[in-house]
Length: 119
Length: 113
Image 1: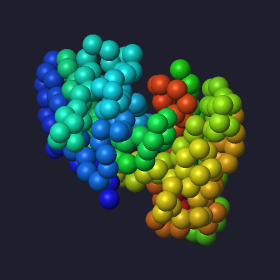
Image 2 (image 1 turned 90 degrees about the vertical axis):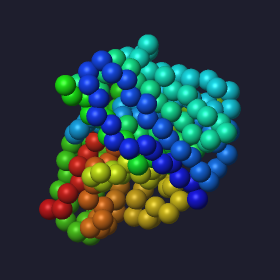
Image 3 (image 1 turned 60 degrees about the vertical axis):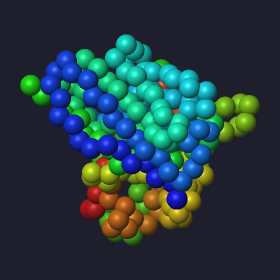
Image 4 (image 1 turned 45 degrees about the vertical axis):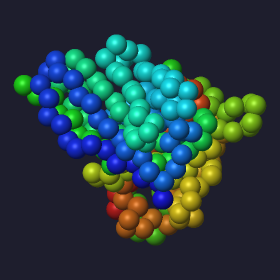
């Protein structure tokens, strides 16, 4: 059975960085694409970026360029999302989500990681 | 970027009755090469991640009850819950995955009347 398990909640001060992990199991991680999506309280989900694990290729939403880094550790089957220069508006639940196949929908999601940015 | 707009924002339905949610994309999300609409529907309950219900606009994900169905093509899509059950109270989102960036609709809250 496929599982994505994310790291725990974080509280950060403005200007700091946060790194969230997404540990996978139950499928071939190296043949997949992992997306990161965030959801602010009461808002729609917002796509942030993805990593094609096999090709080590990444794409980011333009608004996060320069602040967002998505990486992976193939041997550990884990993807990471790091967001720097945090602002209060970055307070949200952050999700990893697997792409079901090339250009497919997001079929499996992590449980979410709450990131709170507050002084 | 493609913008997704849902209607209505909220919906109150009696138990056992039909719920219909609409979703419109700002441009066609039908790929001519494979004749597939790159549209998914998700259900989200409080404190949980979105759950995939429908992909390719009308294909039900494994394990999803057949009271959920999707239809539409091009720019206009519909999610129908044929007979609302207690466990269907949730927020529903449409999402296109036609190009990057993918985008979600603003959500439709389904409640009991």
